[in-house]
Length: 440
Image (tube, rainbow, N blue to C red):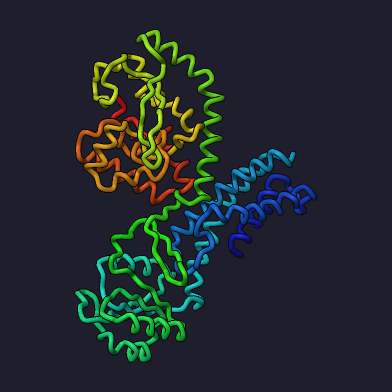
């Protein structure tokens, strides 16, 4: 926090001097400086891991968290500046360019020089037992803790190569007393419950970190949350960030504002124009309305600009050179304009701007029968665009690869959601090349 405060206030003063040429801020600039500092910490609830446990956070994760808070700060300060201040607008770009340099630089210097100053203790750890994900866990520990990590060995009867066996569980206390062990990773079923509790208490009394890897860890490799019921820990295996109330509120608020702006400033003139062209080229309604599967398997009516002649094969997916597609329809599909009426669905709450694409009922049932994890897509609202679409998984799902690719990308999105991930997907939808793949 201290390093960030120094970076923020140094950026503020440098920007003030460059823009005004003065050495001492006036009253209005002092108020601005106070707001800049308060705003940085007021946005922390939306920027995860910004001030987590320092020695266990990788530099990449730190910078990503700093960048998230940086964007929120930029949006907030720009709005406040617009409403409250009449000063030179050149301060904003100068301040944020300077801040973009000083914040990462401060974090880098902290990571670089704190270990060499002897302020971080060497992490000597042992492992009890073995499980399949142990190497991945150890890699995370090694990359964190500022690199000051030493693996002493493994305790147990069945320790595979290349792990170093240092003894059996009945000799563990002797080894801990003889060596400077300050962390134990427990991944075994060789000890009885009372013996594990005894070892945990011993670790607690001797300032040793004790971590447990569940043996069936592959079952809970997605989002998890530890809950305590009447003193007993229970692992909840579906706790993705996107499902939390705070984040659902943030996502819904963005959907309402974004869809309202699109409806007022774009669809207000685009809707009648495209409706006229669609009707002129092919008799029938301007919109194609179809029942699709949405949040928690609930059906809703999805709106699209009609891109085909009226036909009785509404459930059949479009294919390349499909004879049903009109000339204006081909343009709408290629440009993604056919999806624009779905902003009405977003505003009503049936859909989100970003999320897994909604499928027709028959296709949804087909994919649910073929892919075991497919149903997880319905834990959030379907979107106008999504992570699968910006990665080229758009259009027909005729092959196994296309079905599994789309599903895996949608589930990955659910488990890695963040507000800025949605912004990234919107950006890639507008400017990324892969959104045009299979656009027919």
